[in-house]
Image 1 (cartoon, rainbow, N blue to C red):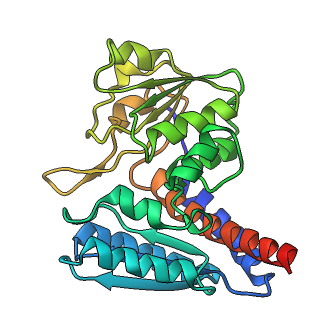
Image 2 (cartoon, rainbow, N blue to C red):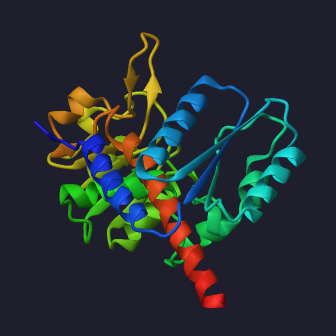
Length: 285
């Protein structure tokens, strides 16, 4: 039976360390979260982020805009937050209403305040192996692997999914850790066969329980990024957990695996952004 990777416990440890780090600062980092509309799932996420930020000592600012907010109005709000010295991190909750282009919004956030790690400059820095703000979910996965003692150097890693939010940055981080990385997706030939070659399998396809136990190599580490709600209300990942746990060496549950790490890494990005901004200001003065 696979070892269960407890993302809740690892995230709690990271938040505790951040609380100590924030308490030692001469200023209070500020995080602004913008929600456009009243999507129930997005509203839950925003409240969770707000609560977690306050718990570690970050000043959380939530801005809820009407669903019919124009793109120009949202960009004006972002411009004001970019110029606000009390704000170190800006996050716009996705998805956005149809009248607003997500890429225009992401590009409008100043790269030094882009705590989601989605700005084109931060994406380029990650691809080039340079220092920058890294997307929270892939960063959380790396911390889970580190805390679990998984050896990445020389390991064969397969990332299921090629999204700009998870799949591609996940592959870049694994590659930087000297893993041999394959990105597989819905058009990959023999998807189960590709998965069976993995020492580390990261599933981020957004398809409920798509990865079956027979897709997994004995002893492999399985990181399930997916979160899907079934008709009966249950939350499940992209991996059929019960089957996979009989084969894998270690596996994350859903919920309680990657999800808590995403929020913890958002908080860490906010603290990193705050520290970097103050260092730059000190050098300039």
